[in-house]
Image: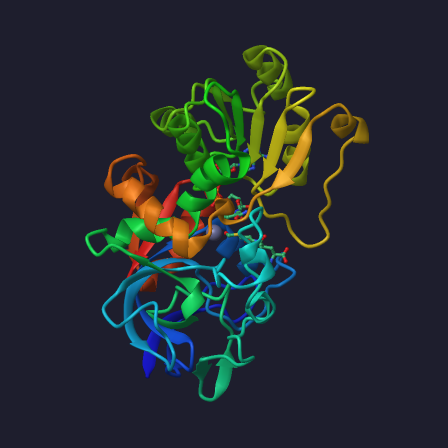
Length: 367
Ligand code: NAD
Ligand code: AHE
Ligand code: ZN
């Protein structure tokens, strides 16, 4: 079949709207009509050329929601008409990782996914016979896409696609990092570095679990008001104050938990070092480019601070994503106010411009 898609032909260039050939689903695969997709900073990161796994030409996008239109042989967990959210972190429920209680990082298809290929080592997308790569196993910047069955969460049918697409990455990453990975206790003091599409979800996650102080850090003062709306108690701008001093004063000696939601190795160090001696934990969510490394004095760890990371909020997608959709539908989390812009696929490059200029929290593309 033919599908409309935004194609990334090379790093650093705008996406190009193309009619792409799409092969139908093979065994264990599913054809999904994407109805809406968010644009995450990770899409911009890969498009910039900084992603060591970035390969082109590719169809980016990993924050979508849509409807199953066809299934390949042997598919049993979804059927045509089902509403689904694509999962860049699949859940096969069989690999050593899925069977281990401490991780959500299913490895069943990780190798081919990182190469932009389906599990059989080929691509379903092409233009004039030239293969176009998949991205993060999702390629949601295409109106139709093919995914492995294990990379689809089936969700309730009354949930709006233009909102729940954001659960495909940003919402789950932020709220899940607090609830599933860090397991922040009520009364904790929390610091969030970067109040964008991820950091604001960390803030609402921290409020949901009953945190005490929720301190937001951003260079953009426009983020103060929306941060407060989502539960932030204090805002610090590194250009206007010494944030380390500010955090120490507000928390009586350091954060119980900090979350880095920028992708900058300098703020990652600050996020660790603002943690309370003896027990503070810093969780890295931000993704840093090829060649970047983090550093700190080992004494920071010797004296009890913990450095760790979180991918997709620690969520096991097929199990947890439908629950997060319920949280949204039950009014426990707010998604609507974080979606600041909507556009058709033809205007997707505007979503990247808005992000780079700090004007959007989340842009959602509707097909
Ligand atoms: P975003 O662009 O929406 O937000 C980034 C925020 O950081 C902005 O508000 C910006 O003003 C602020 N910022 C930038 N530099 C800063 C600095 N030096 N000090 C303080 N604030 C600064 O991005 P996003 O979509 O929220 O993504 C954030 C990061 O999380 C990215 O690196 C993204 O790739 C990563 N991410 C990781 C996961 C995961 O599973 N680990 C999932 C999604 C996104
Ligand atoms: N490809 C990059 C790493 C990118 C990365 O860390 N991705 C996160 C999700 S970001 C979503 O917006 C992730 O899930 N990582 C775990 C994994 O297995 O990719 C690189 O550095 O090579
Ligand atoms: Zn993302």
